[in-house]
Amino acid sequence: MKPESAVTLLAALAQNSRLALFRLLVQKGPEGMPAGEIAEHLGVAPNTLSFHLKELSNAGLLKSRQEGRFVYYAPDFKAMNGLLAYLTENCCGGVTTAPSNSCKEC
Image (tube, rainbow, N blue to C red; front, side, top):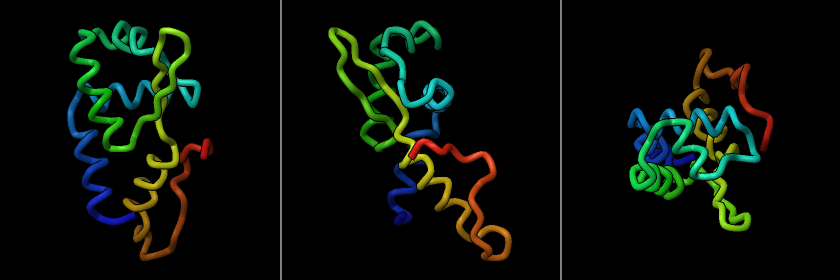
């Protein structure tokens, strides 16, 4: 991962509501959640949620899919794990080790 990409991903997460949103979706897993359910769970107004979903999606941290009249959002585990790998690639004196609790979805 290039440093510029890492900065983009980290900047998208550097806000309380977006971080809570991303963590919620990571907990939910690859099936994701519909936008209305996310708004209800986080207690966020729909227009505010739309803004945060757009920011995370534009950064490449979320994927979306249409099912009927609902849009489901899910984390992009490949992007998340790529960021974690980038952040930890030189840990432990340069010995490459995967984070012990990294997601195995990708």
